[in-house]
Image 1: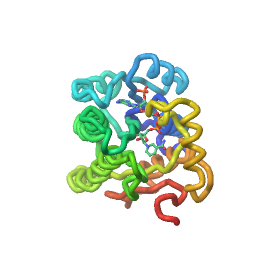
Image 2 (image 1 turned 30 degrees about the horizontal axis):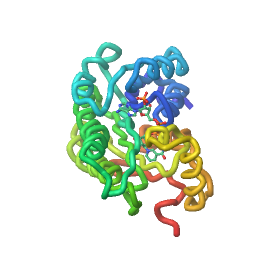
Image 3 (image 1 turned 135 degrees about the vertical axis):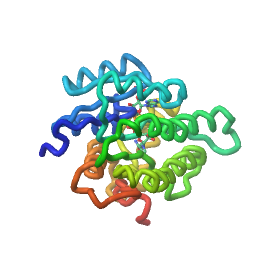
Image 4 (image 1 turned 90 degrees about the vertical axis):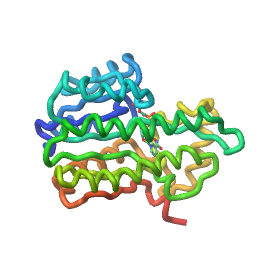
Length: 250
Ligand SMILES: NC(=O)c1ccc[n+]([C@@H]2O[C@H](COP(=O)([O-])OP(=O)(O)OC[C@H]3O[C@@H](n4cnc5c(N)ncnc54)[C@H](OP(=O)(O)O)[C@@H]3O)[C@@H](O)[C@H]2O)c1
């Protein structure tokens, strides 16, 4: 399939995991992808792997100065964006008693403020018929201990899906969200846990997943690209949960 022939995607957090898989599949279907990440090394490495139809921008979604210069940085590569996938982010987890203000500010700055101003920056470049997809999380649907700040931040992003959809309807821009379950990416590496603790956490999570396995980044990318494609032309203001039923099956 060549659903994205000559289309341009801006994928924040595209150096790894879900964002990288989405860039890879978008390019394999004829598109060009501009990815962001926090360091020159990770961005350059990913662009090299993605090939000639990829470009990179070093931009930290948790740094408002970086986010507010995104539009100018994108314009160095293109005047038009057909898909914005606001995906940059990570999870950090803490119980309520030990969470400090920096934990709260870090997650809200990156996930909420970063997403909001990324959309604001890219909006003038999004043409009629384009699509915005926000990455939320299945954790917004359940109560998980130690996830209070991360879940609240992702719930704010979930709320943007509806309000942005309302506001951008007249621009003919569709807005939707993808809500991943437990996906095998580098997400655990930002949590401060050791490799052994990460393996322990994964093994304790697996029994709670109906399919008894983690999802792959490619399985989320498929959902993102469906939402971005013409096949989803009547889907607007909603969220597609891709979690093997983890949030709804008991
Ligand atoms: N994996 C899961 O189980 C899961 C479940 C639900 C939702 N999600 C969401 O999916 C998104 C992608 O995560 P992932 O699982 O694919 O993790 P990942 O493999 O660690 O990838 C995260 C990506 O985001 C980038 N990134 C992180 N912080 C950033 C920042 N402040 N500014 C710009 N880029 C940043 C990373 O790039 P650099 O390191 O190069 O900066 C990397 O490309 C996140 O929003 C996460 O919350 C993941």
